[in-house]
Image (cartoon, rainbow, N blue to C red; front, side, top):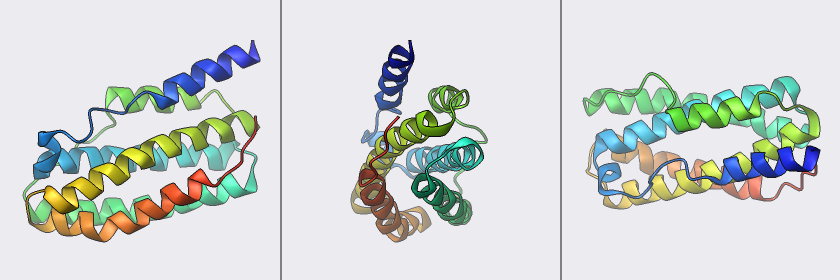
Length: 166
Protein backbone atom coordinates (compact mmCIF):
# COMPACT_ATOMS: atom_id res chain seq x y z
CA UNK A 1 0.00 0.00 0.00
CA UNK A 2 2.80 2.39 0.93
CA UNK A 3 4.49 1.72 -2.41
CA UNK A 4 1.25 2.38 -4.30
CA UNK A 5 0.80 5.72 -2.53
CA UNK A 6 4.37 6.71 -3.29
CA UNK A 7 4.08 5.71 -6.95
CA UNK A 8 0.76 7.53 -7.30
CA UNK A 9 2.20 10.60 -5.61
CA UNK A 10 5.32 10.57 -7.75
CA UNK A 11 3.23 10.27 -10.89
CA UNK A 12 1.12 13.26 -9.85
CA UNK A 13 4.20 15.37 -9.11
CA UNK A 14 5.70 14.78 -12.53
CA UNK A 15 2.60 15.86 -14.42
CA UNK A 16 3.36 19.12 -16.19
CA UNK A 17 2.29 22.23 -14.31
CA UNK A 18 0.95 23.79 -17.47
CA UNK A 19 1.80 24.23 -21.09
CA UNK A 20 5.05 26.12 -20.66
CA UNK A 21 6.78 27.76 -23.57
CA UNK A 22 3.68 28.92 -25.42
CA UNK A 23 3.39 32.24 -27.20
CA UNK A 24 1.18 33.53 -24.37
CA UNK A 25 4.12 33.19 -22.00
CA UNK A 26 6.10 35.61 -24.12
CA UNK A 27 3.49 38.25 -23.38
CA UNK A 28 4.08 40.02 -20.06
CA UNK A 29 0.76 38.91 -18.56
CA UNK A 30 1.36 35.24 -19.40
CA UNK A 31 4.85 35.26 -17.95
CA UNK A 32 3.76 37.16 -14.83
CA UNK A 33 0.87 34.77 -14.18
CA UNK A 34 3.10 31.69 -14.37
CA UNK A 35 5.88 33.31 -12.33
CA UNK A 36 3.46 34.43 -9.59
CA UNK A 37 1.83 31.02 -9.33
CA UNK A 38 5.22 29.32 -9.21
CA UNK A 39 6.31 31.61 -6.35
CA UNK A 40 3.08 30.93 -4.44
CA UNK A 41 3.45 27.18 -4.84
CA UNK A 42 7.13 27.23 -3.88
CA UNK A 43 6.46 29.10 -0.64
CA UNK A 44 3.43 27.06 0.40
CA UNK A 45 5.11 23.72 -0.31
CA UNK A 46 8.24 24.84 1.55
CA UNK A 47 6.18 25.78 4.61
CA UNK A 48 4.79 22.24 4.71
CA UNK A 49 8.31 20.80 4.72
CA UNK A 50 9.43 23.18 7.43
CA UNK A 51 6.49 22.00 9.52
CA UNK A 52 6.47 18.25 8.83
CA UNK A 53 9.65 17.30 6.97
CA UNK A 54 12.54 15.37 8.46
CA UNK A 55 15.71 15.95 6.44
CA UNK A 56 17.81 18.89 7.66
CA UNK A 57 19.12 19.37 4.11
CA UNK A 58 15.60 19.50 2.66
CA UNK A 59 14.41 21.82 5.42
CA UNK A 60 17.34 24.16 4.79
CA UNK A 61 16.38 24.23 1.11
CA UNK A 62 12.72 24.85 2.02
CA UNK A 63 13.75 27.72 4.27
CA UNK A 64 15.70 29.23 1.39
CA UNK A 65 12.66 28.79 -0.87
CA UNK A 66 10.47 30.78 1.52
CA UNK A 67 13.07 33.55 1.66
CA UNK A 68 14.06 33.59 -2.02
CA UNK A 69 10.57 33.25 -3.44
CA UNK A 70 9.26 35.83 -0.99
CA UNK A 71 11.87 38.21 -2.36
CA UNK A 72 11.00 37.16 -5.91
CA UNK A 73 7.30 37.79 -5.28
CA UNK A 74 8.05 41.28 -3.99
CA UNK A 75 10.13 42.08 -7.08
CA UNK A 76 7.56 40.49 -9.39
CA UNK A 77 4.79 42.64 -7.91
CA UNK A 78 6.85 45.78 -8.47
CA UNK A 79 7.69 44.82 -12.05
CA UNK A 80 4.09 43.84 -12.82
CA UNK A 81 2.85 47.17 -11.49
CA UNK A 82 5.33 49.04 -13.70
CA UNK A 83 4.18 47.04 -16.73
CA UNK A 84 0.51 47.39 -15.71
CA UNK A 85 0.02 43.63 -15.38
CA UNK A 86 -2.33 42.12 -12.80
CA UNK A 87 -1.07 39.07 -10.92
CA UNK A 88 -3.32 36.14 -10.02
CA UNK A 89 -4.48 36.08 -6.38
CA UNK A 90 -4.45 32.28 -6.01
CA UNK A 91 -2.82 29.10 -7.21
CA UNK A 92 -4.10 27.49 -10.37
CA UNK A 93 -6.29 24.42 -9.79
CA UNK A 94 -3.42 22.20 -10.93
CA UNK A 95 -0.94 23.70 -8.47
CA UNK A 96 -3.55 23.67 -5.72
CA UNK A 97 -4.00 19.92 -6.36
CA UNK A 98 -0.23 19.37 -6.16
CA UNK A 99 -0.07 21.26 -2.90
CA UNK A 100 -3.02 19.36 -1.47
CA UNK A 101 -1.35 16.06 -2.34
CA UNK A 102 1.67 17.03 -0.22
CA UNK A 103 -0.38 17.91 2.87
CA UNK A 104 -1.09 14.38 4.18
CA UNK A 105 2.59 13.39 3.94
CA UNK A 106 5.23 13.81 6.63
CA UNK A 107 8.81 12.84 7.42
CA UNK A 108 10.83 11.08 4.72
CA UNK A 109 7.77 10.64 2.45
CA UNK A 110 7.17 14.40 2.46
CA UNK A 111 10.85 15.12 1.94
CA UNK A 112 11.00 12.84 -1.11
CA UNK A 113 7.75 14.11 -2.61
CA UNK A 114 8.80 17.72 -2.01
CA UNK A 115 12.17 17.20 -3.70
CA UNK A 116 10.40 15.57 -6.65
CA UNK A 117 8.06 18.53 -7.05
CA UNK A 118 10.93 20.98 -6.70
CA UNK A 119 12.86 19.37 -9.53
CA UNK A 120 9.75 19.52 -11.69
CA UNK A 121 8.66 23.08 -10.91
CA UNK A 122 12.17 24.50 -11.01
CA UNK A 123 12.86 22.83 -14.36
CA UNK A 124 9.74 24.46 -15.75
CA UNK A 125 10.52 27.81 -14.11
CA UNK A 126 14.06 27.83 -15.52
CA UNK A 127 12.62 27.23 -18.98
CA UNK A 128 9.99 29.95 -18.51
CA UNK A 129 12.42 32.58 -17.20
CA UNK A 130 15.05 31.74 -19.79
CA UNK A 131 12.58 31.97 -22.66
CA UNK A 132 10.96 35.18 -21.43
CA UNK A 133 14.28 36.86 -20.65
CA UNK A 134 15.44 36.12 -24.21
CA UNK A 135 12.27 36.40 -26.29
CA UNK A 136 9.66 38.18 -24.16
CA UNK A 137 8.50 41.71 -24.56
CA UNK A 138 10.80 44.30 -23.01
CA UNK A 139 9.94 46.17 -19.85
CA UNK A 140 10.17 45.74 -16.10
CA UNK A 141 9.03 42.11 -16.23
CA UNK A 142 11.76 41.22 -18.71
CA UNK A 143 14.32 42.88 -16.44
CA UNK A 144 12.87 40.92 -13.52
CA UNK A 145 13.20 37.67 -15.49
CA UNK A 146 16.83 38.43 -16.36
CA UNK A 147 17.69 39.27 -12.76
CA UNK A 148 15.84 36.29 -11.24
CA UNK A 149 16.88 33.58 -13.70
CA UNK A 150 20.30 32.83 -12.11
CA UNK A 151 18.73 32.25 -8.68
CA UNK A 152 16.09 29.88 -10.03
CA UNK A 153 18.74 28.01 -11.99
CA UNK A 154 20.83 27.60 -8.82
CA UNK A 155 17.74 26.28 -7.01
CA UNK A 156 17.37 23.63 -9.70
CA UNK A 157 21.02 22.61 -9.54
CA UNK A 158 20.83 22.41 -5.76
CA UNK A 159 17.61 20.38 -5.56
CA UNK A 160 18.85 17.93 -8.19
CA UNK A 161 21.80 17.11 -5.94
CA UNK A 162 19.61 15.83 -3.08
CA UNK A 163 19.61 12.13 -2.34
CA UNK A 164 16.37 11.75 -0.41
CA UNK A 165 15.00 8.30 0.29
CA UNK A 166 11.55 7.43 1.53
